[in-house]
Length: 126
Length: 126
Image (cartoon, each protein chain N blue to C red):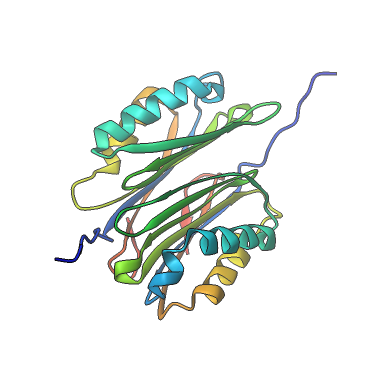
C-alpha cells in the first residue's frame, strides 16, 4: 500500500500585541526561550527547532518551528512591547492556551488580541 | 552620550492562505527558499537567517528571521495548500510587495488574505 498520510490544513492563529511589559524580561533570550517552550507544551504542540537573534542595542526575535507550524516573539524592550504569534495546524492543538501562559508570565498592562481561523477557505478573524 | 537607538513597533502583517497550488512546487524546499529570499528583497526587508523542516511523507516549513520580523511558509502539497505570513516592522517595509511576488510565482487558484496593522494599539484587520 502506498503512503497516504495527510495533515490537517485547519489552523488557529493567535496574534497578540503586549504592551507595558517589563523591559528586562523581554530582552532576556533565555527567559523567552523558557516560556516559549512551556507555551508550546501547554498548547499541545511540539518544538522541532529554534532560531533567534539578539539585536543591538536591545530587542530579541525568537522563531520556534513547530511540528504544527510556528511560535514567534519580536520584542522592543525600549517600548515595553512584544508581538507574539502562535499558529498551529490541527484540531487538537490550542494556541490560546500557550498565549494565555505567555501573558500570565509577562504581565502586560495591555493585551491586543486577534485570532485567525485558517486553512478552511476564507480566513476568519475574531 | 548613551546609546538610544529605538526601533519602530509599527508593523504590517500579511497572512495569506493559497489554494490550488502545484504540489511539486510547494514541496520543493529550494524553490520556496528562492522565492522567499526574493519576496523579502522586494518588500525592502532583510533576511538574518533561515530555519526549515521537510516533513514526511510531504510538506515543508520555512521560517525566515528578518531584521524586521519574519516570513513563514507552511505547505500541504497533498492539498495544494500553503499558508504564508509576512510580518514586518517599520514604516518603510512593504510585506504586500513580497506576498504579491509569492502569489505570482505560485499561481494559486484561490487567495485568502488578511492584513493586520500591529504595534500601535488595537490590532486592526483589513
